[in-house]
Length: 186
Image 1 (cartoon, rainbow, N blue to C red):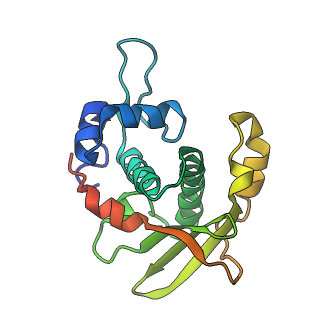
Image 2 (spheres, rainbow, N blue to C red):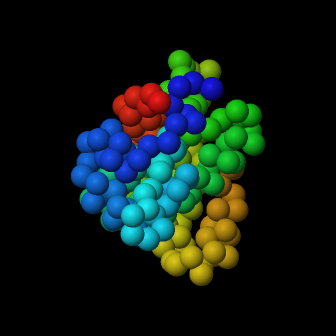
C-alpha cells in the first residue's frame, strides 16, 4: 500500500490540504454529503477523521459546487460514486478510490451529469476504449435516508454499460484529475 492510504486526516488537515475553510467541510458533513470513514463528530469536543477516499469526495463536491451544482445533488453523486466503485472493483479486482486513480497509467474516471438529469460515469484507459456507465436518475436519489429502497433500486444496474443516447453532458468532472491534484501523502 502506498503512503497516505491508511492515513487519517483531521478536519484541520483536510481543510489545509483542500485549501478550503473548515466550516465548509463541516457543512458538507452535517448535510450528509461526505460521511467520514474513520470518525464522525459525536458531540462537543469530538473530532472528525477522514480517509483518502473522503478527501477525494470533498474534492469532487467542491468542484461540483464551483460549477453551481447544489449540495443535495453533489451528495447523490458521492452516494452513487461509492456504489460505482464497488461495481467496478468486482470487474477490476483491486480497484479502489482514490488509490487506483493516481498510479501510472491510471484509468480516466469522470462524473457526468447529463442534460437528461441522469448521472453517468465515464471510465477509460489507454488499453481500452472509454465506456459510459450509469444513467441513474438523480431525482430518485435526492430523498432522505428513509428512501433507501428507491435509492438501491436506482443503483441496480450501475456497473453495466449505459445505453447509447443523445444525452449531452451538462457537467463533466474528472475524478482522476481531482485525485491526482490532491497529492495524498501520509
